[in-house]
Figure 1 (tube, protein in one colour):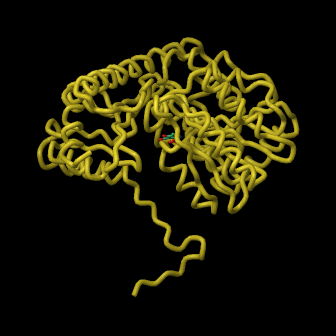
Figure 2: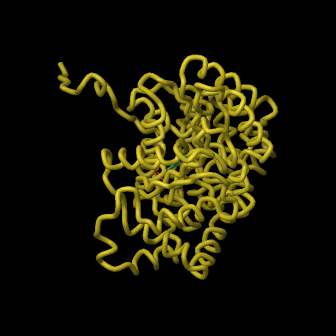
Figure 3: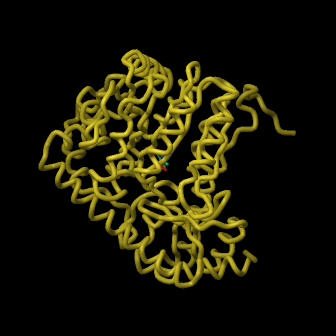
Length: 414
Ligand SMILES: Cc1ncc(COP(=O)(O)O)c(C=O)c1O
């Protein structure tokens, strides 16, 4: 008999991460059949056309050029002041919303999501997200004793489903006083969808209507992929829409250096609060700093210094932007080829705008992924379909992939 001495809330917890599982299968196949014979579409990081993990050259230069003291010293718990200042520019560009704004450094974008769940919902509350979502959201909620529910993200015309969102927002606020809504855009993981300006207007109208006195909404805008979402200023225009929201709607922008700086393992991000009310933002800065102290203390100083150095130097920044653009174009070419071939062979695909992933809707994602192993293609099965990491697959291996996915779907009876 197995024995458990874990506390009641911790009993039975184990995260079987399908992404890391699928990656392990791909690595094993590459060892057996050779790297060239295997397509590993599971990894959420940019690999170049030679399948090497990319580090933006200017980021590497700045990071490696830091002094030993910068590398090893503690940072203030809420983050290096220069970082907290520059991260606003990195996140918002020229579209900084009007209102009170504060940033708190977090351990990656994940840390920002963690603090938002912990500090803006109560035990037993339900957090809202779309039905296509990054799996970690649910794990984070469940680990903290929160429920997680979803609305159907796209309607039958593959448009952002505002009525489905409204129904869930109203239903949840009838039962609880605070609602945390997680929205990942632009370049959504796992579909590559980006909300249009009009979609965002619709979302904000729904939230404003629902935020009656006594009810609070925390709108968490997860922009982890914003640096590979399209033209820099164009994709940031959504932030202007966060100006002038009522005091009982707090927007938290979840920022991550993982993708934009290719510093995934350095675990650096920020949560940026935007509100029309000063006391809401003072509280935001205080409670989230407190939770940082209680969770990880301070975060990675050299990564914060790297961002601050680059965003204080127009020349360095121009170089980094050009490097990001190069890889944005590389990923886009792969997604475009997949989409073209998918259309040609009649493979259904969710509307991809930009980003690291695209998704194929399916009823039997596990069976399809299993079948694809026969072709040495490895993708990630999600609840409602198959995720393909175009960020990690060179163009030559994308060629013909849609046809194989289509054949696998037919073989398992989709
Ligand atoms: C949707 C989404 N949000 C946030 C993150 C944040 O990641 P990190 O904690 O590495 O910054 C990721 C990373 O995979 C993601 O896919």
